[in-house]
Length: 631
Image (tube, rainbow, N blue to C red; front, side, top):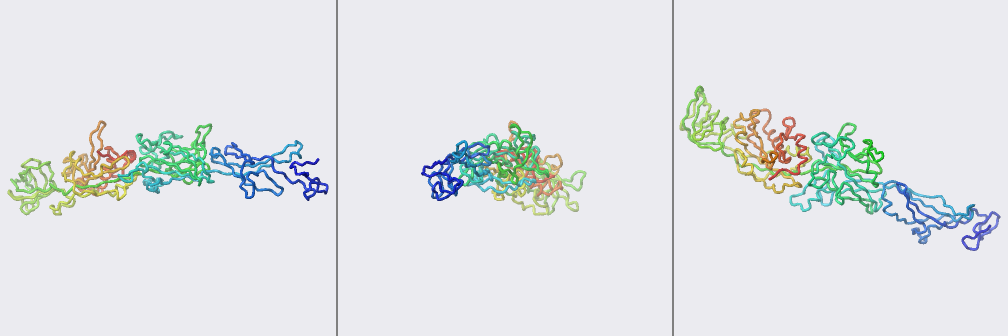
């Protein structure tokens, strides 16, 4: 049987008879000169083996010298074709293996018993589509994200940090400061590929116990995240993507295979986040953080895990872990991003000390009954804010002698001062001119009592380290010593708490934190360690004060922090168990803690066990505050 399927007037096959039966100048060729394929298609299998196909005869050939649509043409020597295939975006929406298969139907049905053209053996190629990486990047115009130094606790110095507060009081785009970009990169770098992104509130690596970390400890973790976003902020504890307002979004890749989304963090220091990227929605179902995450050495961590799922339900805590070092081909996770806040501190001090020297002429001087070594001197002067034994420990200078003061009463014109007689039992003389000097000095009484210094600025070097434990940064440039001439008040009372020069108070806000310190002399007369016996245990000496007013549910903090430097000096010298400087450093941290946390709960610091460091309760309160207190 002879056939001429291609219509060229010659037989299409040459039987083995030694003759050139088909006129192709060849004899006995077997197989015959092949004809073009009668049909062909390119089939795409997605990772779930769902298919899509295209007719080869409709695809434009890219091979040089070929006709536009000749993908079915074949020769005995073989023809290489290159066709452009436009796969719908909807199909290329999953990570995993995509199989591209080419198959063609031959033209040799006349040789088959069934007389049908058959599909030739397929040839194909596998394309492995994966999210290669996902990372944080700085939002345009923001301070660059930097390495997170941690809060001093082991395991907290991981990932990156962001400062969501305003860059300056007059920042015109404050909402941008709490934004970061998430960039997921695809391999291969396909364009218009939808990448699924989901954010997570991971475990707090600084603590796994109350009060700092009070999230649910049962697995799976549900809604008791340990981030602290305030309800009125509108930002979920897991943060949110700007385009959706939720912790989930989808972003298409660009022509470099990169998908970018804008993420918005909460405003509370210590809040932390990771974002997971994948190409398939169902890859996110088993992903979750652990509420009490520790590694094999019991060190705290902040990771996410793939939980074990069965029938759509969580049946186990699951492995593997997903973190900076360990990940899967189909699921990638960012490093931890931790929120830090900045605190700006204005520091003032009162002016020159006044009112601790009295001059005049002595009235009657009498021996104290039963104590020949003591003399009681009458002084005819009217003194405001006077109290018993205020001058105890001071000196009375009269007649060229110095007499140690052992007592005084608070009588009002006259009042009486009791002194130790000078060597030789010499008493002050009636009518002598005198100078009565209190013991209120920064240095020893051997110094010239007339050299009353300016009230110094309170010392703040421990404040930054203390606040860092609550993820609050105080840069040296953010502590501004402003005014050294705030009007002096010897004993600060309630009205005096309003008499400050807090210039930066107007800037204090939820997105720009400001605190105020005033170097002061003493608190109220009953709590100023003057006389020193007020420093006895239980006597209630006040070393500092942060302004407050009575609210419906108790004291409400309103801002300024006073540091009573003279009282601190008196108490340290009377107590003797520590230096005045150590107590001053602790008091600064103590009072600023009240102001920033907006709490009058005592004590803010862990004195004496950890001087100038906050208790766990105050770390929790500071991390939870919307802003420092102000009027």
